[in-house]
Image (cartoon, rainbow, N blue to C red; front, side):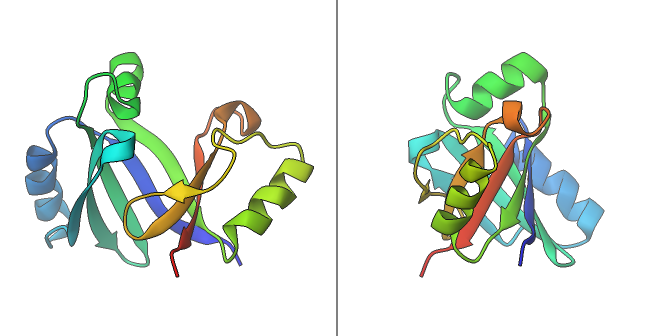
Length: 133
């Protein structure tokens, strides 16, 4: 089974974003977390069955900082939950998809993650994620 796990949105000024979206969703974010290896601070909101992850770069030259510099704030990625990330990576590589990282790595919200290169998905950054056991 594959389902939308979260939608990642790159933003500046996470505190302002949290205030704005708390008003929009009529509830506070449930978690903030820093992923040092990716130079990013995250904030998660639960909206129905889907999570919205706001991402703020903690370093100007980090992946999110570069994304915002090049494209501006906005949709960064869509993440799909998978039961077995290793098996799903093998299956997708067999279908011709290219991954940014060769093996799953630790991500935010207690997940193992792997990103499919946007050149393989017509310009959309796709993240696969699996709950860490």
